[in-house]
Length: 82
View (cartoon, rainbow, N blue to C red):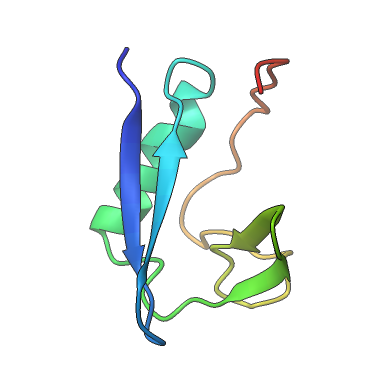
């Protein structure tokens, strides 16, 4: 399966391009793409940012503990691939 990208357009200006790896986490990639198409992430903040390392977002509560209220949690998909 080919790599995919998802582009987030920030309210503060600029884009964030995220490389998705459906070959490593097919369930999670499918859910992220589905949620994005449904507008689930519109207006959702990045609740944790470590410059030069990572950014966490996608939680509508802004706490890092929420999820989609109408969809079940997914089974973990782990990989040693960087």
